Amino acid sequence: MGALTYLLIGSLTTDLDTMSPLLLGHSFLIAALSALLPTSREGYDNRRLFRAGFLVGVGALCYLPLALFLLVGLFAVIVFAANSFRSFLLLVCGFLFPYAVATTFFLYTESLPDFAQFHLQPTLQGRVHETDGLPLWVLLRLLVLPGLLVLLGIGRSFTTSLGLVFQVKFLQLMLVWLVVAVAIAAVGRGMATGTLVLLLPPLTYFSLFLWQKAQRRWLPELLLLLVIGAVVVVRYRAVLHLEQIVQIPAESRYAVQPNPRYDFLRVSACSCSAPTNDPTCTTAWRRPTSTGAGPG
Image 1 (spheres, rainbow, N blue to C red):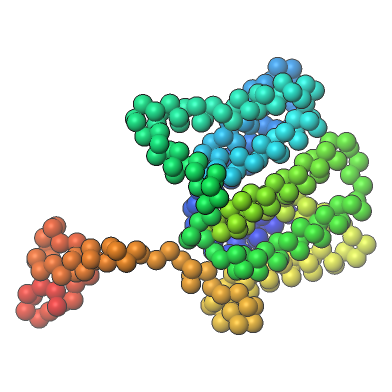
Image 2: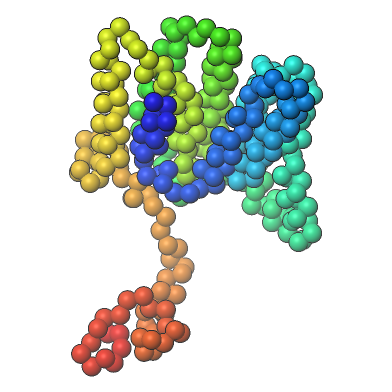
């Protein structure tokens, strides 16, 4: 049910259909989660922690605010690792390794100032938000359903007996993940493309408590049907002409538009009068004529 919930909520908006730096970097965070969990083999923790830091570093190279995920790694080290300070140093060393490689490469190619300008300065100067993402008020309305499910799952988790100590620690880890996800979204001012993906891992975990057996067995099934119906309505609100009822405009209204400065390229391509089979003309569409003289 966790995978189904991840798939359903991930299909809530077409904003997650676009490959973005945040979406790409978040994939590395998912891979780093397994390396943060404890292991029983002595000496293997060192490689796991270094790998976790390395994956977080690669994710931060894609989208710098994801470096805040080191806070989740720090909490995991404190909770699970025996030697917290040494383990956290391994995590930090793994995080810095991708940056050391990238810095060396840009240094030898004499493009280190460009790396600092396009990767570091936007975050450090508070300009990390993207102009091609959804407006904040649209994103907040899209987050109503995921936020409601998270709150219901957290409330249900407090009334559920977890049993093992590991399960209690993992619950605490996902709570920290949720707080860090909100912080990363706040750094990007909620305008980064694919911001919703930050809430999917904690939502997937806490939703597991919603699908557990209840005294009224029909209640989880009814909740699942309501979630599916809500996702379908929100996802296809433009096709079903429900934008006025849902009060959420279609994401296509905020899609990336061509820069007007490059309109002359399209105009010059369409005005090409060469024959159709001439590769020098980049006209994608030609109007057929009876004389075969060329484009009309």
